[in-house]
Amino acid sequence: MVVSKESQDFLDDLTVYLYSSGKKEEEVKGIVEELKDHLHEAEKNGKRVDDIIGIKPKEYMEQLASEMPFDVRGWLKYLPIVFMGALAYTVMGDAIKGEIKYSLIECIGYPFIFLLYLFSISRLFKYTSSHKVSKWKEYILFLGVTAVIPTASFVALIFLGKSYSTMAIHLGETGNIVAIMLSILAFIGIAIWSKTWDAIMLPAILFLPDVLLKHTNLTAGTKDMLSLLLSTSGICLYAFLKLKEIRLRI
Image 1 (cartoon, one colour):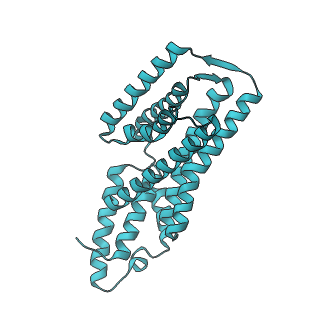
Image 2 (spheres, rainbow, N blue to C red):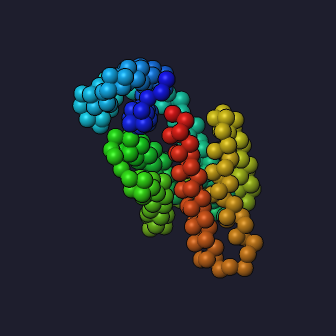
Image 3 (cartoon, rainbow, N blue to C red):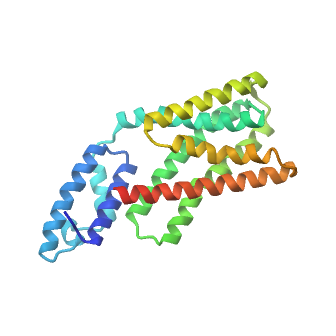
């Protein structure tokens, strides 16, 4: 069943908005398919999206989301997996540098940053799907949420941890090796569970610059700057491509 570009764009935005609001996948698909039928019939009579929903698209999305239950079980199923992946990323990066030592502040701060990141991503998707924004503005917002906010949060946490000495965990060389192996197993497990390469590609983008730059004669400061630049650019590019892929799929 084919509908106009305006209607399809609205359906795509509605899908993203409802998913970002934590609604069940089956219910979202059912509602979108039913609405697509109505739009298809309405277009035969020369009507547009606004004529069918009766209100602004943003108001319609908010109203529909408020009437649908939050998928608590779905979130509880995915959150532990996502948290395990985030923990593996953090530990892997520190283990490669040979510095697995965390203060109490960092042990509390990392989960907080993780939750802040999820919340920010959800708000970003809801905003871009319910507002008409240019591609350039969407890219800037996406860059801010996926790169600037996490980077600024981690930098602030590092300085806060150095200001208050509250050591909680400190692993030696053997601990580093064990941490790397466990992180690799976690990445492989998540990749198998999710049936995607994301859990393997993202660590590669994040950590390969560090591993490769270790074997150069550059200064430590230059290595850190290049590693951050390459990793951040790679993650942003990969995430942007994945977002486009998702939008084309739904």
